[in-house]
Structures are given as C-alpha cells and as structure tokens.
Amino acid sequence: MDPASTQPTILLVDDEDALREVLADFLRDCGYNIVSARSGGEAVQLFVKNRPDLILSDVRMPDGDAIFLLSKLRLLGDYPPVILISAHSDISENETLRLGAVRLIKKPFDLNTLLEAVRSCLPQSKT
Image (cartoon, rainbow, N blue to C red; front, side, top):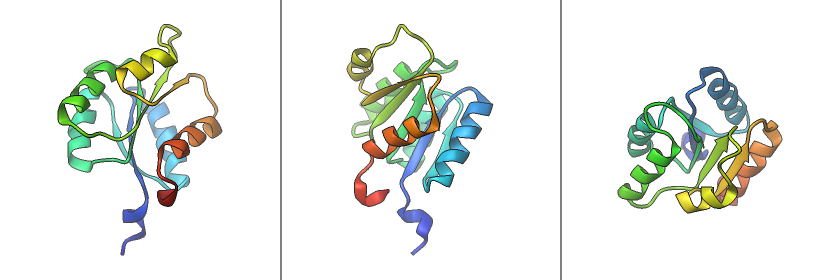
C-alpha cells in the first residue's frame, strides 16, 4: 500500500500564490497530501475529483469566494470539514458556522495555530 494513500488530503484554496505555496509546503511537511486551488470555482472541480478529507479556504477570492464554494458543496451533498481563513474583521465565528464551515482562523496567524485547527478537524486515526 502506498503510504501517501493513507495520509489525509487537504484541499487548500487561496488566490494568493505565495501564501498558498507556503501553506502547502508546511502541511506537506506535516504529513498531509495537498491539492491546491486559486478560487472557489476551481476548488469545486478539485473537490469532485479528489474528495479531500478537509478543505482550508480563504474567504475572499475572485472567481468564487468561500461563500460560493460552501453553497456548491452543499448542493453536492456530503462534504468534509471546512476551515475558513480571513483577514477581514467583518466575518465572525458565528457567520462561519452559519455558512457551513467548522472554524475561522483570522490572518495573520502562526502555522502552529493552523496545524492545531487542521488536526482537530481530522479523525485521529488519519493524522
């Protein structure tokens, strides 16, 4: 059995290339498979193809923001936990839950905070 096949897969969605690459490298180093998208629209396509264990998404992006992404995921049925990342103060934890995500991380954040959130959303047997 390929060891990579037992690692949880995270769909990472952010329109900022540099941040997406840093987060992807960090999460890969922590033992996760990463699939990356630049927009909510692209993320929907990758979700259908890859069926990730977790989605980590920026809130505001061109071509399909996190609200668009979550609405499309609801239409597709069962979807994994979604953690939203935002630099904007106008989105709250309550709004995050109302949208269908499980957690909100405010930018700037440290990588250990992100890792803790990711681990808390994945089954212990997979991490």
